[in-house]
Image (tube, one colour):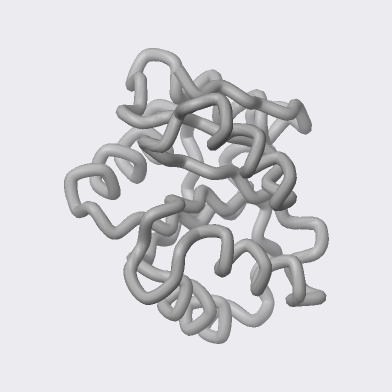
Length: 140
């Protein structure tokens, strides 16, 4: 994906921690250059947001594992059951970074894994690589 396409990518961040959400959104907009960013704090809000964006093709969902009401694995299952999102890349973004957590995420069907705390120097490159089609599995 060329840089101009990065600006056109549509990214949704599902993160319930306000500080983490602010950091992720800031890096996506300022450092990566993604202009179509949306955020929500739960899976319920994700699907409400998607209803409000019926014509938008979602390229990437950054999904926290520990979110209110349901965990990220439950939300991933719902995403994978939504025809509109079959081509959407879904990356786990979590503080659960033990080897068994990465294996569980792979087995569940995530397309990538980024560990928290986010490395603000490395995160822009991780997102560019993901939006370029690369599979990124970096718990640390």
